[in-house]
Image (cartoon, rainbow, N blue to C red):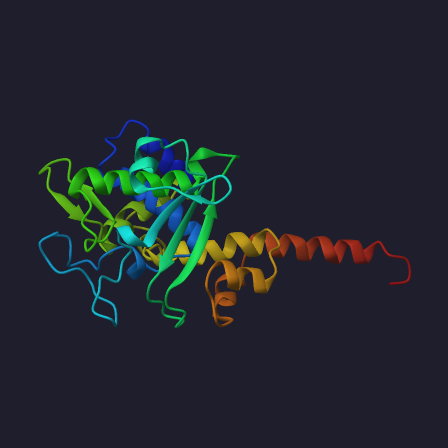
Length: 250
């Protein structure tokens, strides 16, 4: 779905909603992000409104001070340098100021993806910050997930409704689902799909449980509920049964 979205963004204006969602879907798939960590609920799209707040009374979603860029050797870059020379950042750190798991202030490191720029968290975090600075300057109290409406040209927050609409369009195209006939299946796609998808990707590729929990900030085993019906796990099961059947006197 992410690669399909990237292909659709190619000719889009960099400050548009679809361009912003491309970036945010990428970085939240890497982080296993919760909706409240980056986007607003459905009823808060106007930047003049108070954004969703956390238990400390500050914006729940990422703000400018939560992001830092680094060059090779983990040397910190100033924001001015990172924006002026976007080829320099090879790492980014993201601070999760308040978390559901209680690990407030946790910082996660993400590195440059040398395999596919469309899947690079550093590139997409840089794009997010570039968009934000261009549209609202450097206000440290406005959440980063914003876009400029292509019709009204007003700057708005990205909301849960924006996320659901884009995800369901992508899912309908990829899985050949009809918006009416398959409405129940499409309704399963939401902002939470990024957190679920992050778990499924790592589980499918053989990451250990402790690695999944560390990378995606889980303090419980609840994430395993999301991975119980993966086709790739069933295929591994089939292979195991076949291998056992070929063993003499098993």
